[in-house]
Length: 365
Ligand SMILES: CSC[C@@H](O)[C@@H](O)C(=O)COP(=O)(O)O
Image (cartoon, rainbow, N blue to C red; front, side, top):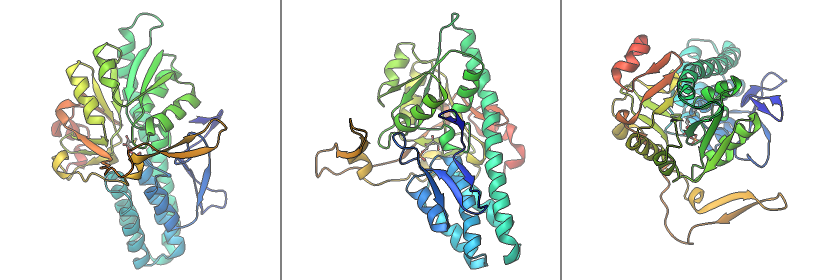
């Protein structure tokens, strides 16, 4: 999507043909910095520190991380070490495990000399596939926005609420939750996107607002607890969020706070959709609350905030009473019963084992 009128993706192969470039998302929205990854450790650090984040982009970065590792050490031991290092970076998004299994399946049977090139080719393909999956999700989600628009008076905006950043910054391009939004905007449908700030790391306020703004999509940032109020007053037509891992039964794990939005949506009769590419489905799990590992992150994400001061320089301040203990759960699980539909690349499924199996019969174990 566009940054200052120029099309960008979140990750790409540098001109030298082997290093990998990313947009450093820890610097947004105040600085646009492209970072060069030159080895396995740099790729692992980028995922761990959330320079890249969002389930699909984590998966593609891991695939490129394996390619970088194959430049350093293409032996069996090198491959296993690379996959173990990358797998340990973040626990919740299943796209990470999926991408690493894909790379291992491809590379294990190959000789050391063939691994490097094969790894780069497959990482590039996974990036392209992610773009295609997100674009297809956009098409299916667009129909939902069009249906909402059909009920509006001429010129009246469709109000879409989203949580965290499931935008193009969380994927290679388009985003999952935002793909229908970008397509609706391109079609000239009047929109207003309610952007939850998404404490503690503010992916909504910092990233979703930034990317929608750069693409010219009308939006308003709201504090995390505003969604319920908006829904009570008829100001949300539909919610669309992303997911880091969805069980075979349709339970949805996403950024902390998603569950509360789903509860408010059900109480107010607002449709609550989850947009996801199929690599985000964990076919081995059937109970999201019991089985999905929830990442717990550094307390400093809760106690401190970084932002720009009046002169444009960056400053970090403490916002919690000094010394107070903190718990920082990064994700929660929304049970399938609260989800109106799963917007996948193959269409909108009901959030159930049957619904997912009907769209992806060949993936059912
Ligand atoms: C298309 S991205 C879907 C999810 O990965 C997204 O909603 C989310 O929760 C991202 O969390 P993050 O901790 O920023 O990686």
